[in-house]
Image (tube, rainbow, N blue to C red; front, side, top):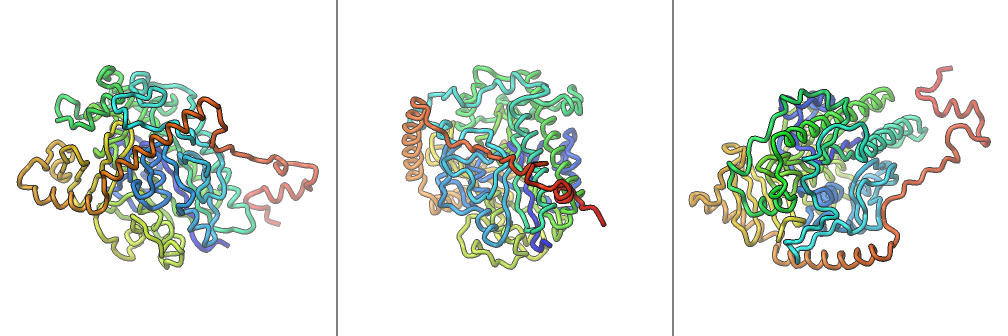
Length: 510
């Protein structure tokens, strides 16, 4: 029998908590996530370590912030020398499995997972490398543009639906394998979906859950906010300046996004059903989260790449044995999940080698189980990718959020008084000491000028290599899932009765 709890992590892509029923949106339907939240722990102030896919996911896996592991952008290589939570959990006896997206870049496509069930949806090479030496140049091959907004709507199949259908099928099939195995070792599984990430195209079943005329539009536009330089770079970078969204396209995009949130929620329900029917639910902790959010038209911005709340905040919900029903308001981040998962696996005993390692995160296990307090109310996020010109840092402490880079005016917001982030307190003389304190903390921790040099050097070497790869059609690092059919179903070397007995769950009672 399993003793340590199983861990199932269900990860969405580009899901802002603002656009879920669980976190209070009046229209968006997320009944399965709602049900988990009703019995579990809901983190109301969880952040991404970076408002971009790959850096956020590498930090999630490693428990370290992006600048610490050179996870600068969506084509930065994730080094095999960096231990992940999979390594630590496997060392104490866990099985580990990934179904779906993790955006690993480089030849290592496992990073501690003992098994991957699908390929990734994005390339594993350096093709998504930005170029800060040419800040005015759009890399049209892969840069976001506004086509996802202008072409939003409904379709029965897309490459994203194909992918996520496959991710869910293989992951749930694997849960039944875990239930049937005689050894019954604990497992950690990550099932990572690409929805509700753009393109904003939803299956009719989920599109029809919503009255199109009731879809809410963004509260803020470029006409009623003071647009900061980084926002302007994003607006130009995604071509929203030359192809702006009108009311119809915005409503279509948000409608499809809400529908795809419900599509992801439907997958959550299927996992809970599978855990329940196998009995695994009694000893499995389920976490629901995302890599980052989506501005979804607010302030004229789409997608991510900024530290405003819709792009930087994420949902984080945990439920299962030992997890108390609660809402946690203190700030946290995906970097906190590695020490949290180790604590879950060891029931807080800290017997893993991870307890002796240095991480940027701190365990949330005490908050989830009422065993104690977490420590500082703080979350940190980094950005050093497309549409930026230098490294950027966000710090959330208490009710204050501070955004800093070396050459541009910092931003400071009191999120209790100003949830829409309209009033930049950094320009208020009364907050001079606060701005200086935040600035000092950042500069003491990171030399942003040296990091900028490191970013540019990394970009240039990767651009050179990728250029050669593109010209010579060198083999890629994309994960190739291999599945032998030698022992599948009925085969000549198996006894028919034995096949029936071992594949059946629950087993036939004699």
